[in-house]
Length: 520
Image (tube, rainbow, N blue to C red; front, side, top):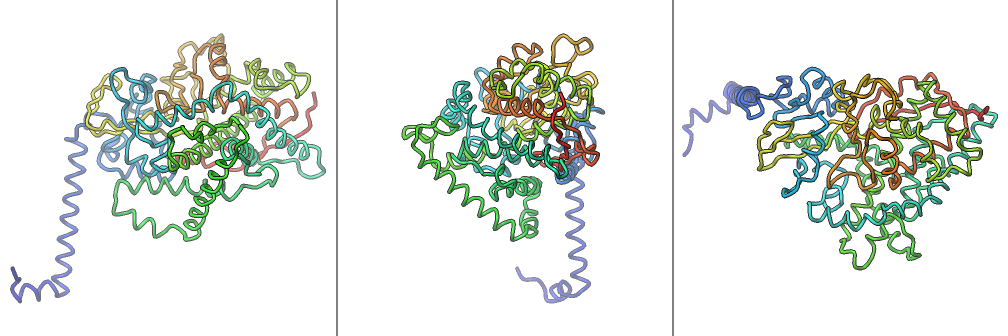
């Protein structure tokens, strides 16, 4: 049907154009207001507590996500509203300890609650890897990897880990005894250590960060990618924004990202050429009968590098900062290490289990500075799930938020203080702590494969269960060696080091520490 000529002329005139644009804006505004009103007053989640802006639109969530403040903002909501809070039109956050198993745990006779697709579609890894694989393939790949993470296999890696710990101790010794300023950025050097270890255990060769005193290009692009992926995650809520955001991505970053992917494939393929019988983290994946496809292998090894390096380095930074920021606690930890060992050579994977107080320091650091402060949402999909005693409707994202859970006075006494004594089991004043609320590496079939333990009030049982943990073996060994060899002082420039932003992982500033030869 053709418009009458006079109507066509009207539409093409300046006045007609402005009225048309005004009409479109009015319609869009009406639609937005109607959608927001529905979300606030009539949505199936409308009975859950939370701020109206978060209930109406994803703008509140996306704003805090893009600014690196989401875990802290959610924590404030939980302080105000309680154990469950609505953080978006279709998303709920929980902090009650039971939520770990209800959301992420094994469910006899039922399948696990699936991962939230809008969150995981922006993840660093590809869909084929163990991090994002469908349930059946995830379980299969994980079983193939389990041998590399067994306690026996972990103990076989001690010489490798000790070698790289020795390189770091050697550097610190040079700084402590040298004529120049003996200040070390522990943020960088812990990352050097963990990336070199994981490079050796996954790719068959380290990144040589410790020897070069610098990040390998493969490593440096990871930190840029993490923040970029958070912005991509925000565009999932408004798909039309994605091409706009991509226009602002620097060409240099895109080029470096492609170079990293090519280098990753090269390193992963290099590991395939090693046939010396080594029993590292990926040996089982490379067996001819493993059944693991090449895309699954390529994606999984990238995930192992990032997850096994950055999170371990973050916890090492966190425990170091909180020890140095609490002199009495530091004194106890140092005294324990130095009185237990008369030689650094006696510090080993097995012997560090005697260091009860140091283990409690690590556990408390996991609580006050969890390597992942945010949360990994699941989605109810086509089911109605019972969480925290209340039915959660279909297509709802649900999550436990680490920071909010661990800093909640509902779960821990004096939650904002660094108090390792709460984990010793016999210290009065902490009887009402919900120790099972602390699950930094998650629970259930998708928990971190590098974790072979659970957190229990009984430290002796907990210590026994941590023996096979790769991350804990690294951290206990290196931290004990550092405290045995050196006296450490936090530099004034780093007194507020823990005031950081979070883009899934922490955006860590320099942790400047003065390193001195030990006096005792």
